[in-house]
Length: 523
Image 1 (spheres, helix red, strand yellow):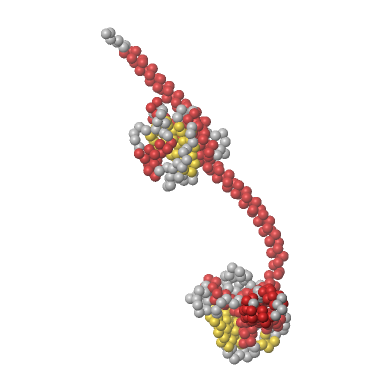
Image 2 (cartoon, rainbow, N blue to C red; image 1 turned 180 degrees about the horizontal axis):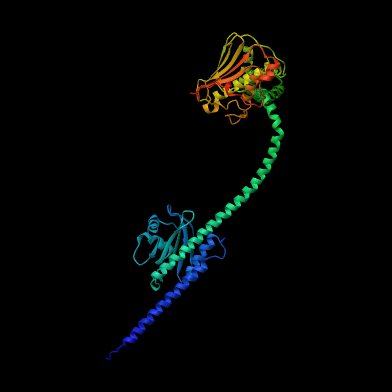
């Protein structure tokens, strides 16, 4: 057996040739990766997420010779896969990232599976049909994770190698792909926001046009504000009367419907049949005595008689209620007509004014069980515009009833006061134990347009305090705060002021009452 001796120079030459071949292979592989980086970058930045992810997986399989590749987006807290694609086979349905795998990804950031057993990734590898693969995750712009995998199935894993150089290039490639995917998400967000902005701009243009129209209407109606404020009290009275008439009409409708229903329900058809049966008999005495139908006819007539008597009583009761409701409507209209005309000052009984205001306000704004207490002291008559005082009192009583309605207490109480604090004046006051007045609302309570109710207009108290000034009196309130109730106090002179003095002493109707008109007791 001969021994072949290798020349050391030849051996060194072979080793250098092998190193050069490996370097050429590494260089060629690096060029493939750089070409892949260039290929995965889109020519335009408006590529959708699905198209960009599909391009990355196709390059990993087609250009970089991986057997399988996948790109997916998942939520790290739940493991839910938001989006994903794979080559050459699609992702399995219902794929989820298990908690153990998600924690493994978060801890390492990237790696190579298959060299050593990693139980955390076993389930995912089996679901994707991979035996050896590179993996890497990158954060997305919306807080989720992009996960990239590329490798071989169990059938071909033994023929494929996964060197460290490929691992580094894979990390660079996937970082670039993840940035492109995030860019796709941002472009989609920008498109959506741009569309929303265009819609908002069109709406803004329409709003501006509407605002211009509204402004023009506002300028045209500015001169009407003072008049509307002046007439708000009378409108409140008219609204209350109409509301009360409407309530009574509801009762009228109910009574009419019940009476008509009972009338139509009378058993008149049966009586007709019995009448025909009796007309056919030649001998009624024998028919009632011997024929079974005669006995049944007598029983039926007896029951029908009782039924008719009951129905007559019921219909009469409904018609009686109907008459009472119509009388109530006539009384309401008559009372309204008495105050419909705007007259000069006249001599009035303050107690009667308070009585009339209580009737109008309670009929219009009755809100369940409210105890009304009248504390009327003997007072002199006053020379004043009757309807103007009435509109103030109706507004004050209405506000008190609404405050009691909002209060969550069973002992709801309204007190009407009539007294004479000085020989030359009369005091009309309304107090309640309702929701009270918050201290922060005290300074604004009489301002034009200020209201604490969603359906309020802010005219009532403003108009009332100005009317009180024009009558030579004052209107103020007292309240200990929220939940402590309130009292509104109207002081009027016994004799109306002289017209000249009145016109010079009082502000215009659109002015705001001064702070001296308030008497607030903070809690």
